[in-house]
Structures are given as structure tokens and as C-alpha cells.
Length: 139
Image (cartoon, rainbow, N blue to C red; front, side, top):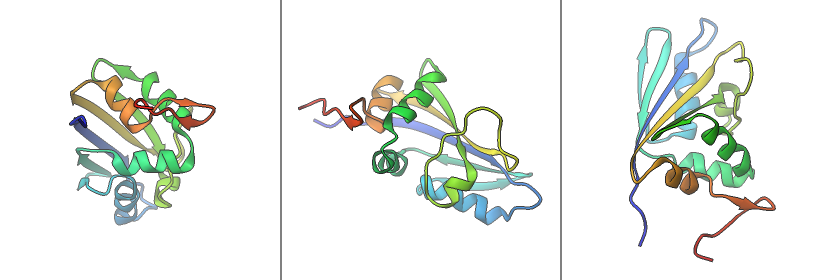
């Protein structure tokens, strides 16, 4: 039986004077295609309820361990946050932002897991790996 996940994903990204708002919105929807995007003063604010495309990118790019590290690093109760490089997201690529924010600012993602719990959802999006390959929990 497959688990039903209930999550609220809030995505914010600054829009600088040198940037085109729609391009920043595209960067967000490249990784979160189902997100509802609003333009607010100097930033994009988006809401999504799944991270399947992001998960597929993590698998394709073989950065599941990196993702798990980023997710668990900022896990507080049923909420975890992480930052993504805006420039990479324009290309539909996941690149976690660590350290100082880039001059364009980063895409900030905050995930609240309602069902079942944050750890299970992280395992769903970025499963544990062995020698870089996802471990199949059923296998």
C-alpha cells in the first residue's frame, strides 16, 4: 500500500532589480511545476503540495545523500527547510545553497509535513542510499 503524503511547501525567492520576475518564477516552477506562484514586493512566493519533480531531479543527478544532509540539517519537528541556487534552478537543476547566499539570492524552501511525518517524507523524496544507490525499503 502506498503512503499518502500531506505536505505544504512554501517557496520564496528574491527578485532583484537586474532580474526578470517571470524568469525567477520559471526557476521555481522548473523544480516545483505544480506550485501556485504569486509576485509580491521584490519576491516570488509560491505554494506547492508535493516535491515529485524535485525528487526525480535528486535521483537523476545522483545527489540523494546531499539532499538528505540538507533536509535533516534543518529539520525541526515536522518542518524542514533548505535553500537552492537560483541560477541552477533556471536550468531545472537542483543545487543546494550552503554558506553565504549568492548575489542573486537563493530560493528558500520550507516544507511542513502533515502526514505521516517529516522523516518518512524525507525518505520518500530522497531515500537513503548505499554506495550512492537508493536502498529499496521493500527489497
